[in-house]
Image 1 (spheres, rainbow, N blue to C red):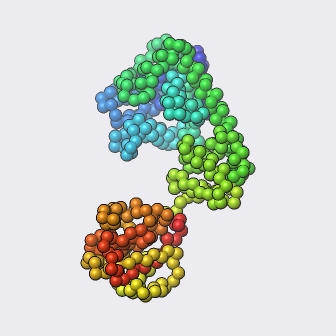
Image 2 (image 1 turned 180 degrees about the horizontal axis):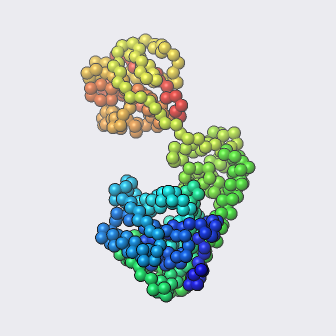
Image 3 (image 1 turned 45 degrees about the horizontal axis):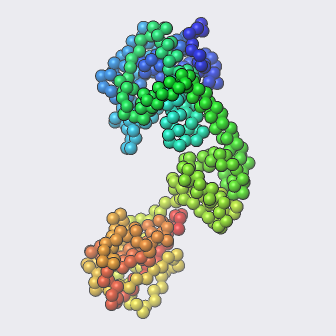
Amino acid sequence: MKNPDLPRGWRDPAALAGLPADAPLAVGFSGGADSTALLDMLRDRRVTALHVHHGLRGAEADRDAAFCRDFCRERGIPFCLLTVDVPGERQRGESVETAARRLRYAALSDWMKQNGVPLLVTAHHADDQAETMLLHLTRGAGARGLAGIPACRPLGEGLFVARPLLTVPKTAILDYVGRRGLPYVTDSTNGADDCRRNRLRHTVLPALYAVEPDAARQFALCAERLFEDEAYFERLAAAFLAAEGASPRLSALADLPAPVLLRVLRLLLPQPPTAVQFEAVRGLIASDKPHARLSLPPRLWLTAENGRLCITKKRTATAPDYTVPLVPGGCEVPGGWVFLGPPQERPEPPRAFTYAACVPVDTAKLVGTPVLRPRRAGDVILAGRCHKAVRRLPGLAALSPAVRAAMPLLCDDAGVAAVPFAAVRDGLSENATAHVTFFFDAPDGADA
């Protein structure tokens, strides 16, 4: 029997997901007014209530879980309690809210897979949508961000999450709860002003509603229009790449309007470009320099090559660590060869190397046993009467990270004695009695 009390703006969750009307549903049930109303609206469907205990809020969280269990038992609604450990599984640098959301959706989707339930229904409503849009607006978001919370989105292979209340204001939900006489619990953290969303909820939204009482619904309708605009631009970008391929012509990219180019780059790159990166890519596309190249995170090269934009992953230097004593004559090191001899003697390496550098050294001033090794974290050299970080020596700025990683250094018991192309320790090259010549290659497969 159809529920006659459904509020204006309600949309069938199965229809939102394109699933049959009798598809089994799971409702994210916190016990608050919104999810309590939602569960009641779906009481005549094949529904299971899922409550996630996050390991936060102590006794209050235990109270909420008990309330949800009792509410469902009294009404004959299947119920399942899922537990996650947010404090224990929170990642470094991750906010509590972000960790809770990540772990919550992981637990919900795992339960759905195990129980063959394709659709999760949540109680996000029009006021939530307004808050999200305002938050994104303060961050300078474009259409994708301002479109806010989607009415339906994939949650995994064959799984979806739908929000049937997304155009229903909070006032209409509270009215429904009152008319139905439904009990619910209140999360005390929602009353605090220690996060931006709560401050918007308590200060900005009431001011907006004073100007326009139906503002929440209008925000939700605006979000839907923006979502349609975003979908249109994404279809244009996908059609462009279908025609151009993964290395599109620079001329074709240059002809694209900025909104379409941005969506093309979102499809091509592993993460959306920032505003600064987007302008840098536009500059690369317009550049007339041959082999122009741009570095983007995470470890990507964008290259203007043969009239096309090519995207390649940076390859990591894999030079091994080693310590090899320096002896007169030729000394083999991984990926290279080092010669110690008198200044007038011309070294003949056993094979051709890409890089070569010669430094004068007074061997009598070396302390202890001189050795050859690659650069290590924290290396410094006394040059110009002060200790300088080897990695910041100006002479190395023109070399790629792979070359700097492969380059052997001359060291002794006092530390770094000589850095090819860059520096010799103070006093070590005066009245030089020998030359040290470094020959080496960058690691195979690394960017030189």
